[in-house]
Amino acid sequence: MLLMLIIMAVFAPYISPYNPYATSNNVLSPPSLTNLFGTDSLGRDIFSRVIYGTRTSLLVGVIAAGISAIIGILVGTFSGYYGGIIDEGLSKVIDAFLMVPVFFLILIIVAIFGSNLFYIMLVIGLTTWPPNARIMRGQVLSLKERSFVKIAKSTEGSDMQVIFLHIIPNGVYPVIANSALQMGGAILTEAALSFLGLGDPNVISWGAMINDGTMYMTYAWWTVVFPGIFITLAVITFSFIGDGLQYVMNPKLSKGVAEIESS
Amino acid sequence: MQNMIKYIFRRIVAVVIMIFLVMTVNFFLIHAAPGGPATVMTGLEFPSKEIIEALNKQYGLDKPIAVQYLEYMGNLLRGNLGYSYIYSESSWNLIEGRIFPTLILTITSSVLAFVIGVYMAIFVSRLRNKYGELSASLLSYILYAVPSFWLALIMIIIFSSDLKLFPTSGMLSLRYSYSGIEGVIDFIHHLVLPVSTLTLIQIPVFYRITRTSIVQNQGEDYITTLTAIGVPKEKLFRKYVMKNSIVPPLTIFGIMLGFSITGTVILERVFAWPGMGRLMLDAISRRDYQLLLGIYFLMALFISVAMFVTDILIAFLDPRVRLT
Image 1 (cartoon, chains in turn brown, blue):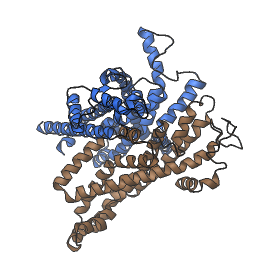
Image 2 (cartoon, helix red, strand yellow; image 1 turned 180 degrees about the horizontal axis):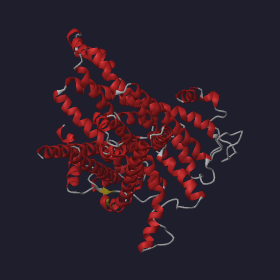
Image 3 (cartoon, each protein chain N blue to C red; image 1 turned 120 degrees about the vertical axis):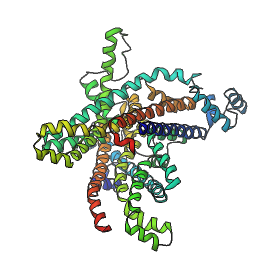
Image 4 (spheres, helix red, strand yellow; image 1 turned 30 degrees about the vertical axis):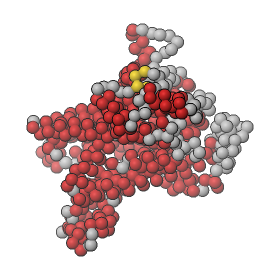
């Protein structure tokens, strides 16, 4: 499924039968052989627009979750590795951040600073890192006690080398699994924002397409139904990946490995 | 008991820090906005300097930002949520009537989702049927991934526009003003679609967390021991597994209320529901900063109080929490 989405995003110009921006006189026509998913209120082909929309959604998912993962990993690692006051302070911040109603914060920031796709990705990334930090901190706390890290501490030159060569590469997997789930979340957030009219008006977004269709939905259901199906599919895909990864590295399994290593 | 008091105190500190953080971040965000409130108030693209100055003076916007910040914080502590420039009315007066509609959607749907999600997990676990489990988890994946606003639109298409069972929007009928029992029925009639949409999207979280904890509890050593002794499975499940499995979904109830209020804001737009969410979206499009801050503050407060109450409740139910 992920492969299908990626193919749709990369080869969008070759797959889509029409130019997604081209308007026509064929307004709000129902799905047919010429327009697979019908046309919208400006006569644009919905099938082509859905395909181009994949690009926006995947981009938002990957970049936003990427930013969130990087910040989360760094904050979590430093907090767990150094402990003491740094850990106390950072943990308090993480705890407080976990309670902040994130979507409203994103809503307000986007409303104030403008709805550029880049801002949207950045803001989603900047507001969703605390869970990653918490996971990473837990990882670091357990890694710190393992013998190979203790050996590395005495052989490597600096703390930075220990952190970047030994701790992060070994502890990062649960964060990656969580990131896959967050990609789905970011896609939903972007869709909701553009549905509320706060998305980037210059890109084709599934949420914005649904918003456009709302006015006509009672007699042109296809304007609303198809983009929504694709949002759902994209998010399900990322949930499967995230859960799959989590299943592969379930704690019991990794505990077994730890025991072998430390003995 | 001493642990308990300590625990409560720690939670209160966390709540206070969080609220302070939220308000500080928001205040500076909003004042960093391009244009500034005075420009927006004039309704002109390039207002003259004189108008801006007069407006700035009238509303205290000419003071240094630090002073404005302290004044704002001081006002909040006294329960004053600020003043809406656009409506020329205090924010509280505007928000007051919107609180009930939003809370009733949020709380009703969370409670329903909790009951349905937990029950579904228990039902599936009792069934011990591979296909039952598979279809339940597939359903939870789908409901998790569906965008709330889209689900709402689909519900409207099916139940309002095609079957004409429920009204498409609003909280009360405008054409007739019912009173007494008829008014209540009319209100519930309008409530059905928004609440069921919100409930549906929250079910998967409760379902999955309960299901996981049931599976975990069933694998515990004491369960194996009791089975070996010969305690009937049915009794074992009712008496031990279920009791222990109910705690995890409860712990996330507070977080889910926060999630639920987000969904409510979006759905209020779809269903034209006269709650805080629509007021918030209006405030955003009109750049009504003070009103926006006021609404955001109330929502943050609501969420943190909800989390606080659930945390305390959990601490009473599960003594392990207090000690960590």
